[in-house]
Image (cartoon, rainbow, N blue to C red; front, top):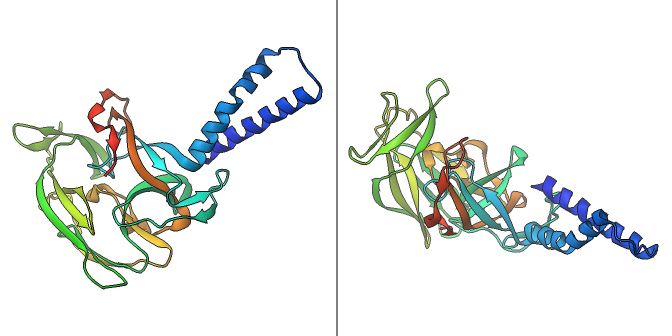
Length: 287
């Protein structure tokens, strides 16, 4: 996205220089190419300001945020909510507001800043996070009141088409069978997904889990994390299919691009495949 900002900025500067040259040398002759560029200048400036400081579009490429976000969702990210950044290098100019529990944020991947990730904020600076891999539940102890603020409610079968990587790095497709109430593939392996509602403070949202009795789950450990100053602990809503803070660490506030606010378009799409339709019912606000 930085590359696109730099390209837009270069075109704008070039267009402004053309305009100045035309005025200084009193060039009245209509040159189609120059006139076309100058006519586009106001539009380019508006686009540059809008996507650099207000809202920027992103595409959801993976299933790590299911069921909140699906592959093929196109979202708008509010870039003015948390901070103001230099659009040419993504350096933070001014911090405005801090992320809160449950916020779905887009950020630069800490191990490769050229890649953008999207996850949900689970832990704030100073929090102690305990993740139980067997129960697939988290506990958060805040630095202020040392109280567990996470609750869970209903649990039910899910109905998504999904792909999962397992055994010898082989990628297989699984489809939901509405009659048998389970997923199936062209092969013999079957797995089940369930949805659970997770409450953090006043925020509640659905997370997606593999069944506890699934043979694909080998580890059943309990992990503890202490969130450092100016850092955030993030997780995907599809907890068993998300590479997040459990594996590569915390997200520094300067890496945060913005908060995901709206789904402005959604294509029926699977991983690495062409869209097959439009999901009009998904267009709207993100939870």
